[in-house]
Image 1 (cartoon, rainbow, N blue to C red):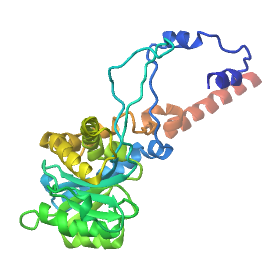
Image 2: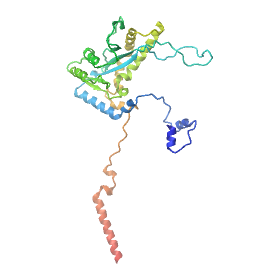
Image 3: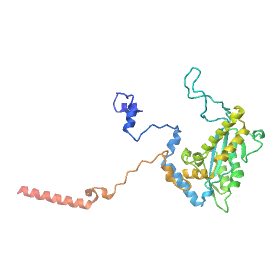
Length: 345
């Protein structure tokens, strides 16, 4: 890019070996950063206009239906490879057999390539529903589950993803019984803008249960998704730590679904805490309601400042005060007429 800018300016001199260091020395506000790859749509759609519009819609629903903070719920689905551990520091020889220094070594990994989807739902009232586990397959095999079964809901789907049928069953069998508000209070259910969640059947099932559905704007989950912000990363990290400990005991045997159920349950108990729910909704600007805290984040593309409309005081008097202009022209013509008369004399 620097070479392109230089050529566009008409210079063919080329860049020196230390041009970057001199540039950073000259512009002290710049520095070297590690680029975190994001999808182009996630970057382009996270605009101030989209974020403000969504917060306005959320606020109007909350006020219209008088939804209490404890009845604001967030549904999210995340995937987990059940047999993959994270790289970690280990103790070993720092030189290879040829005497060369090495910084990396190999670790045994079960590498079970099977994926599982987990559907979680948390509220701003620091509570949660029991998760939904989606295995790959058509039906759940009893042999997949451990003897001491965590109190979750288990299902299977060839796509390992929530669909219309699974979502409606989850609403009726899990969400409604576990989140039923007292009296006639309404709930707001937030979720990613996903086709399976937006079906008419899903919408109707929610409306019958006094639940107002509100999808997040497309490609903005990085900044508006409470679960992504504080919940899923810790639980995935804790699960992989426990999987690593298991690998040391079973000689890295392929991870079974039974092992996944047990380890995920243990990791969830250690990471799902009321303080995390509070932090999640606060970072998302929902409870307490603070859209500006989200808009101020560097990930949000800000609107360029609009030029100020010219005010009457900004205009020159000869343009704004038409009567004064007419009067000045009259006196000017009169003076010119007097000059012409003297010239003839």
